[in-house]
Image 1 (cartoon, one colour):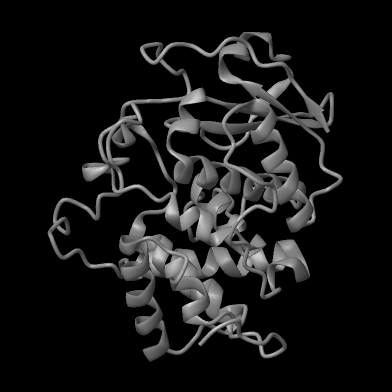
Image 2 (image 1 turned 135 degrees about the horizontal axis):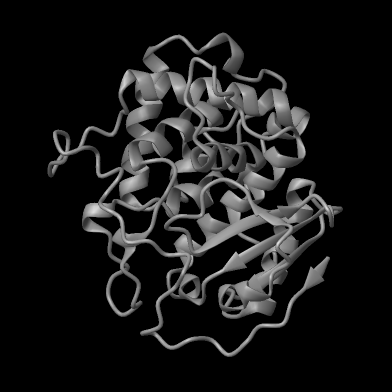
Length: 292
C-alpha cells in the first residue's frame, strides 16, 4: 500500500472542494417529514434495495453471505490525521478480504498533484472522502477532506462506503445498467456493498437527516451540506434485509445503533418479519445468529 504525505491542513474557513451545499435530498420527503417519521421506505425503494443486495451477494460471493458484523476497528484510538486514517482503512481491509488492494491516501488540498489518469468512481458531490481509479497505474486513490475528522460517525461511514465501492469496482462495476429496470445509484450501491462486507453499522450510524443534521455543536461542519446514498429509512430497511439474509439477530444489530437508526431498523425488521422474504435474499440457514 502507498501513502502520500499530508500538507498543512487548511483553516476552518477554507472551503472544502469535496463539499457541495445542496438542498436536503433524503429528509423523508417534504410530505413525510414530521415529528413521527415513517421509518419504512416506499415500496419502490424496498424493491430497489432488495434487488441491489441480491446482486451484491452474487457479485461478492461467499464473503457477502458470512454472518460477519464489524462493530469497531481493531486499531486503537480514533483517527485524527492522515497516518491514523490510513491505519484504520488498512485494518478494515484485512477484515473484509482486501489485503491485496493497494491505494494511495491523499488530503484533498493536494488534489492538484493527482495524476490526471485517475478517474472518479461514482459521484463525489457532497462527500468528505471519495475514491478514484487509474487504468494506467492499475491503482486506487482516496481523497479526503480534513473536515471528516470533526464528525467521526460520518468519517467511519465514509470509509465503509469507499471500501464497498472498491469491492464493487473490482468485481465488475455498477450493479445496474442504463437499460435496467432499476436506476443506477453509485453511492447507494457502494453503501449496500459495505453492508454486505459487514460494515452496515458504520453506514447506519453515519446516516444523516439533512433537514436537522447536527453533530451536537462545535464540530464546524454543516451536516446538511453532505450527501449520503441511502436515507435513514432506507438504511434501516437494508440493514434488516441484509441481517436476516445473513443469519444475524436483531439484538446483535440494534444494540450498536444510535437512537434514530435503531428505531428505523426495528421498524423495518418487524415489517420484513410480517412479509415473506424475497427468494434471492432468503435467510441463510448455514449461519447461526449472533443475537436474538
